[in-house]
Image 1: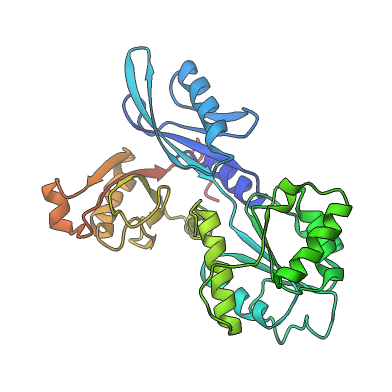
Image 2: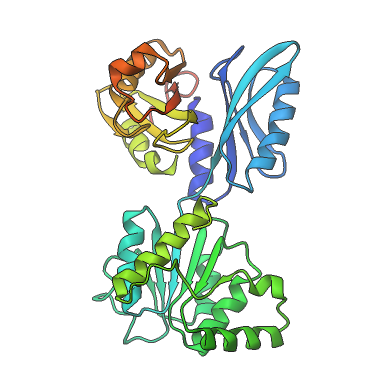
Length: 244
Length: 112
């Protein structure tokens, strides 16, 4: 890999911009590489213009579905095997509601490689003492805070306050964003209230079904750590396109 | 990729040469997802993994060669491969690992 390409690639990761790296792993030009951005812009060369074109088209298809994999191309009667690696930014967990479950959730998420951000306007919950494991603690309302942290394809949003005045601004921001996961803690009754309020705001059924509620996989546990585990397990399933 | 970038940047900063090893194909019960990375430095360090610890030793040895000669290599490990038994891919899966050197910018002056 050329260092210039590596620098571009690390810039993508740092700026949380999606891209795919195509590498010839077998056939003529083994080791040649092409960096592909959504929209078709590229950097590098796989060895033949037609191969670059076809790889760029294929790369654009696999980027949005985070699907790294191998593809064989026939170009000028030669067989070229290309590996496409989708460069996904590090996953980011955003927790709204600095409650007890959030403490356990942040700790589990960190072990799984997530950057963790906790948001709560209530100063008594959002204290550094309680959240020394979090990468960031933001003491403000979620609608303001979420603009600042950004909701992209590698971001997972968990609402734990089960307080409508905190949940609703966060849901309004997230349901029309490209955030990968939205989960909201609360009883069916609480969730119905959220759904009713959002429907009045004009959100469609399709948008509302993006919300995972009740949140988490059904593990049966009731302790804060067990609930946190069920939530992070559901997030891991979503990350890998599994049903959980 | 993002999990090894910090290590690679540090090694480059220390003037070391670096090889990247990437899982580019996996069948059966292969333990690590496609794109999993292990990085190897010219000083003999290794970070990350491409299997459950089964083939890292063999990949490390090949990576030292790749750092020397700059020729990328596609390594195959699996149950049908005698060499794979030797390095113990005991899970019964098969994987292919692509090893490449991270080349310095043209001219070789840029050491950053």
